[in-house]
Length: 104
Image (cartoon, rainbow, N blue to C red):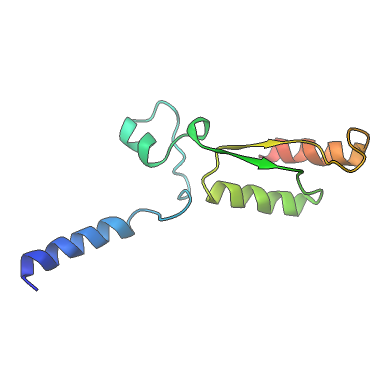
């Protein structure tokens, strides 16, 4: 292989490896007023897809794990509801939902 092709290949690989393949790198969620190239690479939360959740886990640690997973997957937020078990009547389910939304 010619040296200039090897150089071009190395530069291409370095460029690809310097960017995340999946998810959002830590601290890379820009604001809506960030420069357009940054918004295109890492859209602000209000421009990202929303995840539908039926329902949030009751356990706080499981909620935190889910939030971290959603952020890592690049979601901008969630669409959710209270648990369907005893729908609208279970105070614990409401508390779990409120805690999850506050943390998210």
